[in-house]
Length: 423
Picture 1 (tube, helix red, strand yellow):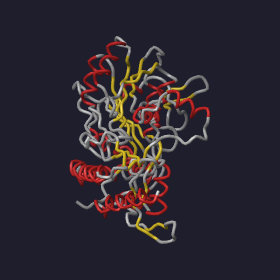
Picture 2 (cartoon, one colour):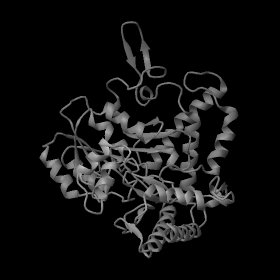
Picture 3 (cartoon, one colour):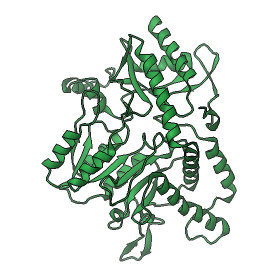
Picture 4 (cartoon, rainbow, N blue to C red):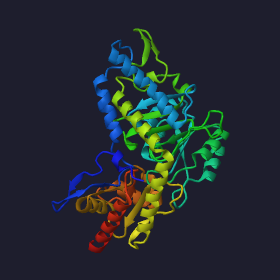
């Protein structure tokens, strides 16, 4: 399979430390992806027709409004939402989506949120100041414990409002059994949010009907991780959660009626989308969805899994490379590793400056998870808190997109062997 001709910038030349140019290899797709050509074409084709949406009577405004509103149907179809019971709220990214739900989900400080020890900070920090948060354990390989989840659901005796869990880890790539989690959550009267940032671009996803005990109540995801990097994301889920109460941002587009004495808020999703909406971002997101669907999510998953298995196998043959629980099943195409006796940031720097290979290094906005995987104790963590100049622990992360190739992986392996020999 070759999807490279679908993606902008795959043959871009970048300068190396020695002044020569080389073709850029991007293995940092979990952070953000380049755009599809189809996305750029959609934006350029629509640009002459762009106008303000809602309440405008000009032709371009009416057209823009129609495109913006019908886009929600496309997003719902893509994730299997129910247009009668669910809503699509456009946001900047997954982080904003999760914060928005945290602001609206429950005003009772007795509500309990169950998060996990494998979450990105964006699916941890927004809950901490508003609710009592407890964390579901992970095993030595970083996989979620369903036994601990059920134990904690029982422990709080119906007070758990939401189980919030990553669909796929941005550190290890592990795909959580979110339908099993949904069944457990619903059994004990809780809802479930799936952070789909690392899942939606790589696997077919279905929220399932509301009557199903496997129904996913909320899903959040970002365009910039699915080849539409134009400041757009979506929160999809129960419309009723957003019907009451005030929006977190107030202003244009959020009201039905305002006087000096009172405010009548708009219905969702409108009252949750204050200000001028990102119509160009929506155009990009829909175009990306259409391209992913045209390729076929099953084909994408199959190809990316083959890249994952190949890279994992090649890396496992290098004694100096430390892999972290390197089983390749139930994962999206992410591999965290380290080179023995070399700091992760140094490895990433050398790969970039001398080989033109982009990777991510550090803790990937998931510090508690990395601390668990690297077995860093509390005393050591306190040392880092006291002395910010200490070299921080972390990993090097490879993350593949549908346009990466086996030849690029071979180039990486050669580079790693050179690094080991010379450093």
